[in-house]
Image (cartoon, rainbow, N blue to C red; front, side):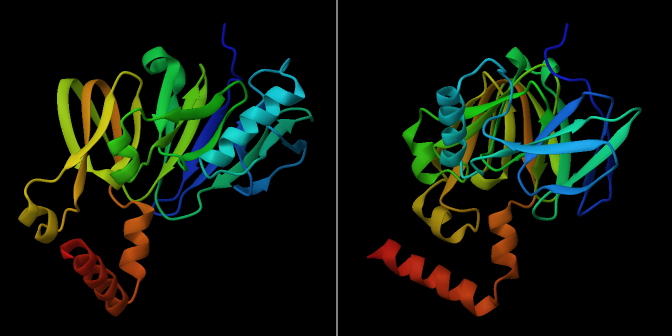
Length: 255
């Protein structure tokens, strides 16, 4: 028997997608604050502290849970959308920047757990637990695009994450995959995530691939994105600003 609500969904669009969730009476979907695009008659929404995965949790527990979201850079509150009417009604969400919305059935992941970059969460069925995942390798925190702090999703229902550009799913079977640090979206529990130097000094400075690469090692699924938001911002910056930024970094690196 599932603990999470069973929800249906559709995803519209290509580059800037919209996620539409269909709710039966008394079904609830939780979402990042400010992500809602539209909702039909019969749906009520309420801003709450916490994800609602543990209804018996007291105020202190909810405060700790919500506080952990602040650590990941997310809002202190989450919005709960519930169908209070009769029949089916729909509520839709969009991501904050162009990219792809990825639906994942958490019950099909290893240990019903998914580790994601800290700003990847978009929405999920009620019953999904969101918490902080601390990367134990300090190098990943200092140099990795994902940082020391990641986000953990646990449950047996649907969760939706957002990534920049196109999403590529890779299955590792006791293998190693090296990736640009900002391109890691999510991975299953049991995958070892670390950051290593990108070759020799010459390659690090002039190779164009950055100073460090993320290393994913183990058995399980990994999801990658082709256009991290930081790369999108850099691409939109005036060429002079990019050159100035790179020149300043080069000077400080060589000093």
